[in-house]
Length: 375
Image (cartoon, rainbow, N blue to C red; front, side, top):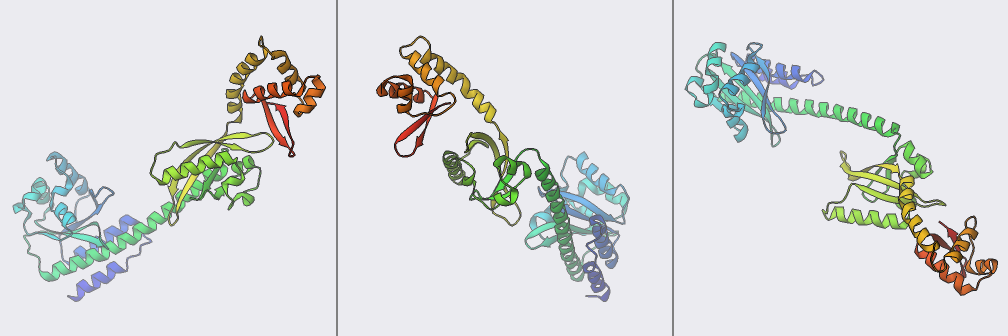
C-alpha cells in the first residue's frame, strides 16, 4: 500500500477520542478523502432501529445533508433504498462507478450533478459483528476502484469503527454516570421512603425517609433481610410474589405490607424490577404509610358489627359491660367473670363472639390464660 495511505491510517488511529464526537467523524472523513484524492465523502451511522443517519460530510455544501433527506422525501423512499442500504444489509462494500447509470441512485441524481460527483463507494464500518455505519467516498468522474483503493477504504472504515465505538462507549459511560448522579440525588432527597432490594429481598440501599419509617439507621438496615421489618404474613405474601415473577406470571406493582409493633402499621409499596450494569436483577421500591386509611376502612364494618352485637339483641347488655370494662386494660376471662359477677362460661361465650367479630382481640399470656382487649 502506498506510503501516503499508510500515513493516513496512522493519522486515523491517533485521533483523540476526547474530542467532540462530530469533530472525530469529520477528521476521519477528511483524512480518508484526502488520502484517496477524492472529490468528497460522507459518514452515515446506524441508530437503534438500524435506520441510517448522515452525520458528517467533506467537500460538500452546508445544506447537502438536508437536501439528501429532502430528495428521499420527494421520491417517498428511505435513505436505505440507495446503495448505502445494500452495504448496510450485506456488510459488504458497494461500488458505484457511475451513479447516473445506477437505478438505486435515481432520487439523488440531480443533487449529485449539482455537487459535481459521479462515482461512489459505500463501505461498512464494522466493529466485531456490528455495523456501526458507513464510510462513503465520492469521485468527480466515473471511477473504477482498484484493489488497493478498496483495501484502503476498508481499513479506514475498520479503524473508524473502532474510534466510533470507543467514543460512543465513553459518551455512554459519561451519560450513565450523570444519570446515576441524578437518580441518587432524587433517591437520597425524596420525602417518600425509597429502597432497593436484591433478588433475595436483602436491602442494598435505603434513603433517610425509608430508614425513619423502619425505625433504624441506614447503616443498620443495609445488608439485612426484609423479614426483620415486616410481619410473617407479609413476608409470605412477598415470597409468593417473587415465585410468581420468576415463573413469568404478571403481578400487581403495588403490595400492602404490615409492620409489627405495639401498633401495627400498614405500608403500601410500589415496586419495579431493574437491572443495573454488571448487577443481578434488583427491585426498586417506593413506600407510603397508609395506616390511617387502612384503619378508617376497618372502622365502618366494625361499627356495624358493634351495633349488631350490642343493641337490641340477646346478650347485648353483657357484651357492652365486657367492652366497657376492658376499654383501658386487658383482662382474662376469670378476671372478667369475677369483676362482673357472671359465670365463667357466659363470659367466655360472649368473648368468643366479640373476638370472632373482631371487636375484641386476644393475646396469649403465659401458658394458661388469654388476655382480651378492645380493638
